[in-house]
Length: 222
Image 1: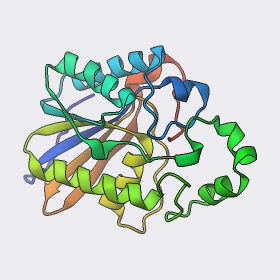
Image 2: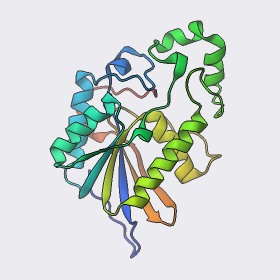
Image 3: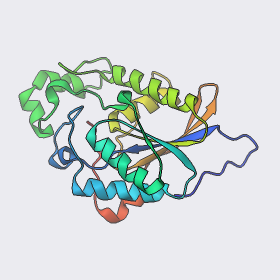
Image 4: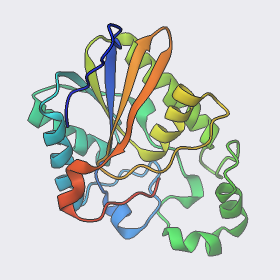
């Protein structure tokens, strides 16, 4: 991955490199994980190593991570390669998927037909029973990414989760009425520039070049 080169005299204050965790054992099984604390699969560890290598040439200064094991394991691989500390941030956790958690995705229409239909409608305010709504996670993710961007100077890696990142990015770069961004692949890298004064710019989304030699990647959220 090449460093970013901005042709004009104006430069962003810094960049956030958002890394979705590597494949988890639940990703591999097709299960909804939400905030369940599951580890990476063997492929997920290799994806984390590939992401670490892709980031290794960049002038990075810190790593933030969700405390959920699949994200933290990914962050630990990156931290070992870059020689940087990890700052845990609870607000980077994935959307809590309530009654869906731990269930196979293919079983949801039969187990919870009404709830699954409501979730699948894309209603941002629908709260999964026992869990959260898209809008709640969007607000949480937007707030924490905004705080991280405003708190530091120098480029930052943020390791987290697919739904949280894509909902938060929709708010940061598109406003609260923007459509949902496509799902992120496990181990993908997304570059977000912060220009100051609450201005963000999405430079790249869902980079996967570093993963191509590892085989197919998972893209399902949660």
